[in-house]
Image (cartoon, rainbow, N blue to C red; front, side, top):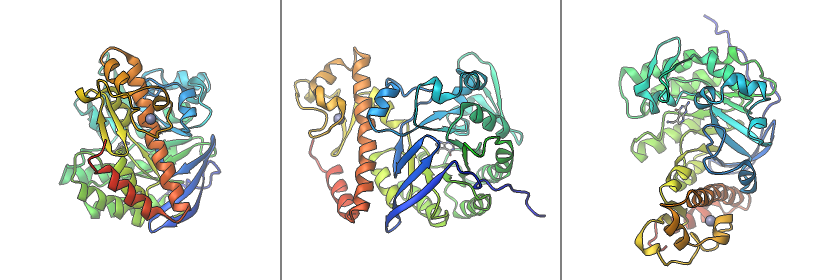
Length: 381
Ligand code: PRF
Ligand code: ZN
């Protein structure tokens, strides 16, 4: 039976130019409808149309040119119809750069107790008011068309990474069956890009099957899903490496849900171009800051009278003005401290990717990576 697949790459909504490589790592420019994005890139997560605690203006000042929204949350609040009416999410949040929206697939894992999956789609029960939302691939794509994201994600069947056996196979095969429904439903191929998501857990044969099927659809870019869910690092790296070995070299690769500083470096070396994760801002709200010497717990007693910035030499707005002591003493009482630490952590990841990229362009990536790991696992503070 011949597959009736529509090509996704006929559009002009995405251009990807690789400027230079070092082994599998790439320094590229991803051109989207709302401007250029230099890759590898970390994409901050603003689930409901705001980055928790930061304004669009602050995100722009940090150098962010591509941020993430979530279809599931936006469909509830403020809703796809509403966003379409006001001219899309860009206008709604006054953001003139690019937006990527996740399909809602991940919520099958994060809200697994509140959802029911069938061949038709996924039924969610709202944790807020108990109301139901049915999300079929068609609904996810329609909502993302209304939101107006520059990059939309296909609805996939996501299961916990460490799942083995039949359920993992079903999820992988369903993700492949759903891809054509996602593509069919996409109404704005000339101005919005749809990325398929490679699933298959930790099983190389399932990954290969999924890769082959999705690559046939000739999409503008591809995501690697189903990782960062509690699996061993060794397994995680091998699957990332396997996927980047098989994905087209001339298209961007997005590793979903990965955002620890050391993982960004390793996976950029393995040829990943885009990352996202809520960890940087979530951990900031609990008082943990990223530094080149590893995580810093600002709540720890030794920070009480420590007048140094989070990281000496950091050029972020937080480190220009505030001390560890100030943050230590205000974390429990003030929203402000959470905002300031989030801002530092986002700057840290955006800047880390910028430095990594520059090291490729300057032919000194190996030195950069060596230096990063020497510091990151040292005992300094
Ligand atoms: N699929 C979708 N979103 C995701 C993931 C996925 O596999 C992950 C990886 N666990 C994070 N976000 N749709
Ligand atoms: Zn800083």
